[in-house]
Length: 107
Length: 120
Image (tube, rainbow over all chains, first blue to last red; front, side):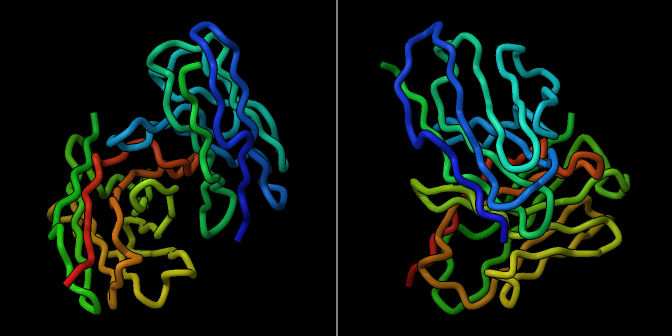
């Protein structure tokens, strides 16, 4: 199975900060990667699919980039509602695998 | 807008079979444009992909669970289901159902999740 790693595992940031989260795959996955936001007690919400495509209804402050093995999720200006845990998911081949998550909390 | 809702027992005894159903509303499970997935998350931990099914009945499972998992679809009821046999405490988790577009494959709509506890 493809292993997904994320860094950092957690970060503290302030409203208005630019935040970047990195996801790395153990082998090339083209651009078959999604990013999710999860808040406590809630289902994950899809933010980005195909590495860089913004899911409908998601604010434009979220963006994704990368291909092959290295990917990033960027929040251009962190808002109070963005404090959450973020996961990447590879859907290149089976079994689909998630990264371990990055928790973004308030500095 | 499509909605997914998980249902099933919240408590299962060790060695028994966990059975969950996902009811899809606001769209047809037979549309042919989607796969239908199950994903789980133990408390305080990360997400694990369990498997998915296409309308035709074709399935793909996580090898780590493959010997114990069965996913099926009932198009007449607009539902799909998960069965996980021989459960242990390690199977205690919130179980989510989700929809995967054929194009893109990334699960886009998820159910709210249902907690299943394995305990005697």
